[in-house]
Length: 251
Image (cartoon, rainbow, N blue to C red; front, side):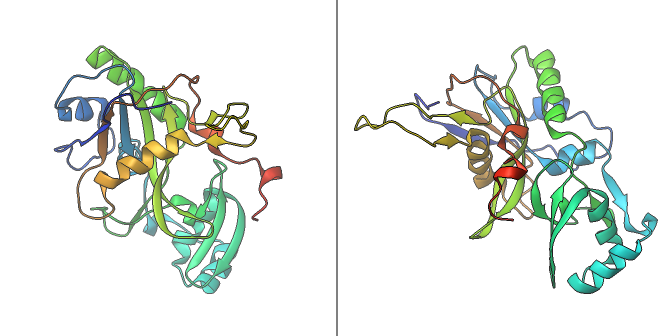
């Protein structure tokens, strides 16, 4: 896992507003400004994957449950939004004013089940995470490979808060064609000491790098082309990055 030459991170412009049913492989292929090479990575914002897959929900169509009403009173959130959060979650971990922390059905521990209302042109709506982000990444990889003649790695990224740290950073919630997690245990450091616990979140690092040019507001850059990376570890999807519940010491 290395960069044997300069790593190039190129924003893919001109993708525009994505709507349900759009072919992301076509949109991304048209936005590329140079041919793909082996080990190139396309990082795609979760938002356009969710939009293309029709994960937009009108809040007026949501009927809050009693549990949602109770949590809405605690968190001071729209009860309809809280109901959506509950529908996407397996556990409520924290509920305080302004914050509803849950374990998403995918295993991710996150605020609001990753449900987003920013940068949506549909009024009074909310956008859910893809049903199966790793499957979405694999499907996009195959479609781009069929279109362009080479299979890029795909990372589906989302902005994420972190325990003990302020601010958000992009992480991988879906991946295909690269090692999401690289095990360095058993390797030697430069002073010949064996690494005992080092697991590198490679897909998260790729997503974070892409986030530097994607932005978080009105930048209009939902996909990034990264070239110059190299890796030798076997492919592993983003589910490998989720810490097993029995090993989670922070909840």
